[in-house]
Image (cartoon, rainbow, N blue to C red):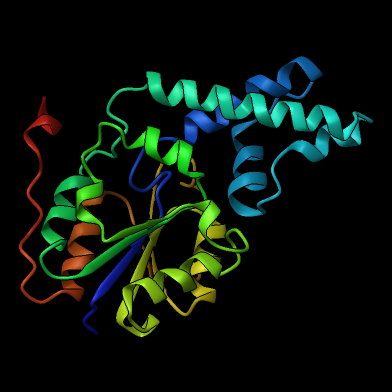
Length: 231
């Protein structure tokens, strides 16, 4: 197996457990309009096809002005839920990052806007492990376009062949692959039924993720679970 010098990480659903909160924010905004957004629809529309759910409102004949108002309200609602949440860091991710940090360069490439990204990491302690963060405002087209990952590789100063990406969504996988990156997919409750045929591999836990990454990085010590994981 090849060795790597860099890792580019997705954020929501990989570093922090925020996708359920985003789903609930969208669902609650749409319910008064007779739209009961299901988890399957959320996955298909937001995490796979990347077109959200506003098309349903427009298809019902609502004006674009309503969509714009609801976008603003969603930003506020999602921000509020992030602030109220506790322990957003994904279980077991911190020891994986800590074990990798001495050996490889690392950055975050996220579709989250900076406002939400900063709130979600206010208490995680994870950002010290990264050389940089690219939020949605910082690059051109959103995932599944490769723009974010291409910029990430430029910031790393490395070729795609010397790096891997870590993702949890179909659109993220397509973005990484389009940038020439091998991509590891981490399973969670939202993506458990998706095949991810084009991934380098699919792992079921962060412990397994650490084992796969260690195979790419000679000298990487095994990730040690945090005590709080057992409390």
